[in-house]
Image (cartoon, rainbow, N blue to C red; front, side, top):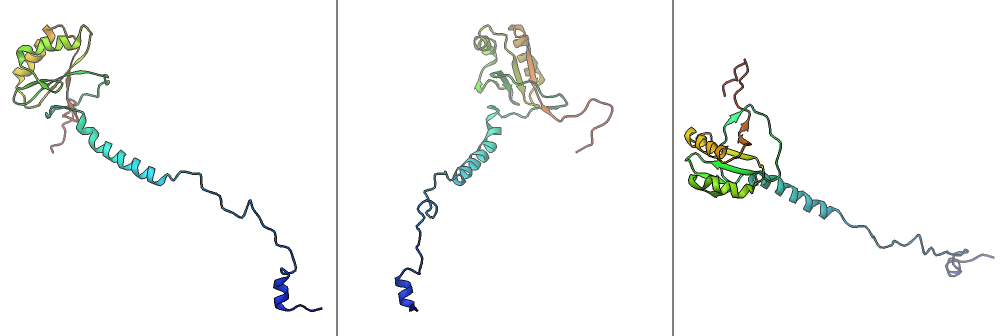
Amino acid sequence: MALSATDAFAAGGGGKRRRRYGRGRRGALSEINVTPLVDVMLVLLIIFMISAPLLTAGVPIELPKTEAGAMQDQPDPITVSIRSDGAIYVQETAVPFSTLAPRLKTMAEGQTQSIYVRADGRASYAVVAQVMASLSTSGFTSINLITDTGGPSSGGEEAPAP
C-alpha cells in the first residue's frame, strides 16, 4: 500500500511529534544589564580623578620645593596659609595678624593639634617668621612647614640645571 504525499502529511508523517515545553522555550532574562552601569561608573571615576586635586588646597600658593619626604596625614589639620603678598589665611578665611593667635586657640580648643604652615615660596621671610613665632608663643608645639617635594638636594652631587 503506497501513500501519496498528501496522505503522508495528513497522517502526521508517520510518527508522533513531541512538544517540549521546558527546554524549547526561552525564559525571561533575570540578569541585570551591567554595561550602562559600567559606563556611568567610568564617567564618575574620570570626573572624580580630575576634580580631586582641585579640592586639596583652598588658598592658591606656590610652595617652595625641598627634598623632604611626605608626612603622615592627619584627619582634620589646622592649616595657616601665607600668600606671596603677605596675606594670612586660617583654613580658607583671611585673618589679620593681630587676631591669628586667638583664633587658632579657639579652633584647637585645648587639644594638642598640629598646625600646618603653608607659605608661598615668594612670601617675605619676615612674615613667615612672625607667624611661626606667634604660633610658638601661643602654646602650639607641633608646627609643620608644608613644602613640595623634588627640590634641590643637599647631598654631594649637584642637581642638573633645568
